[in-house]
Image 1: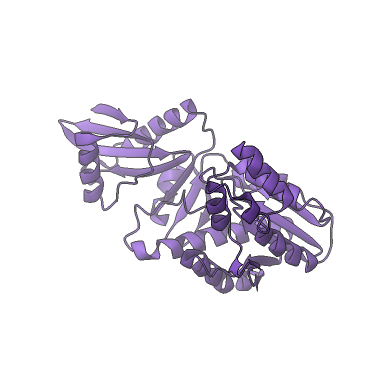
Image 2: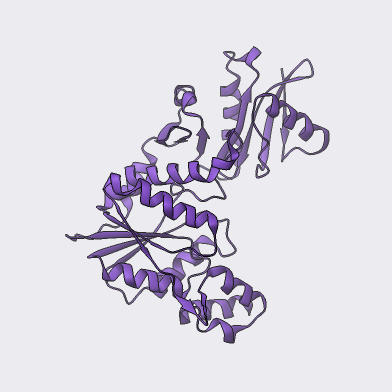
Length: 327
């Protein structure tokens, strides 16, 4: 048996990999950064790939299943991830594969009818939510989950409204570094922009509240349902781990007139969260100069260096940051 590595594969090797995955009823994921393939007599028999800290596109030819090839592939992906400084690994798969990956020391985080998410660290998510700051407060506890790319006065207005309706509000800022602004900077801007609100705590999401950028759909037959499946898994993680750990009983969202995907996510929350004990409160988006304030609008004005037009859209702390960034 021969082993080959791609960083990622290109040309003929890429085409062979795509053809093999198609035969296994999988799609090649364009986001992969590294792939390993196993060959026997010039025949591709197993493969797996890495995208950041997410293992993807793991497949073994049915004629060679039971030979320990999945373990070999996963071992090589672990080695490459560790070489890249990725210690905490995630793996999305079909629920029917649960026992196979548990035997390879991956531990379930959450499962829906279509999707199972596992991690390489036993008790990882339990330890993460236990580490989140939890003020000793009784009464209504709310949550907002935002990307804040960057933090705008629209975000600020939503936080103000939510905080006024709660005894305490937890803000989760997505930790995935797949946005124009780094996660650490986005979280810093939220902290600066809400520093005067005394019943607010800002948290990272870690690897757990999933962004669309890291969610795989390569093994889903119904691609049109990918967003719905992503929402359901994300909300299952929130309800199973985050809400009970912090006593969250309300989740606040802004109306979404600009993004059909986000609007659909809001509707999914209204269906999924209330039966699990979390009320969904949807608030009308704040407008400025006749249009909803959005991070995309801010980024467009930043690209045009129109700082005067940015003033009514962002807090002073965000404006100062954007000016420093341009400088």
